[in-house]
Length: 228
Figure (cartoon, one colour):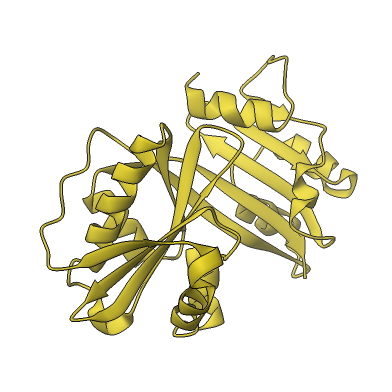
């Protein structure tokens, strides 16, 4: 079992492993809100489930690796998979991005207004898909032709992994902005002695293609089932 799976075992309080499909018994699924019913983590070698007792019986019978399949099985319009993200990890070293993009590291204390103003360029759905949040540890802003054109918000979990969310102005996409931002971010993550993780919403195809083009490899996915 790799270090990524082990970090999730520790996070969900699993100390004894009898199979590769585990109902944890913890209430991790509650982290999102009162309407949340189940959380699922699945890699090639491990599936972890934290869930409400109301859905546990059905989940135990099926041992599904996707909560979408649960909704299909119960044939209910009362549920949705409100979070459906894929976690990518860097395989090897990232190549330097050769571009005219300039990148500055920002802090929320000194640059909150600048960061908030840039984020207002994106609608609620784009912010949700990017999982962009001011509740992050590090920020990097990209500039092209003197204008802010992209931003990375990076946050550190309890394990040694560091995740990003990235936003690029639509009119500046396909111009190397995303690659330049991620290249800089990876270097900073390595300096901090952490492991770069790229989390992308399953439906955010552009974001997934970007990270894959830079050498990130899909390892696992996380999902949350919620009542509508």
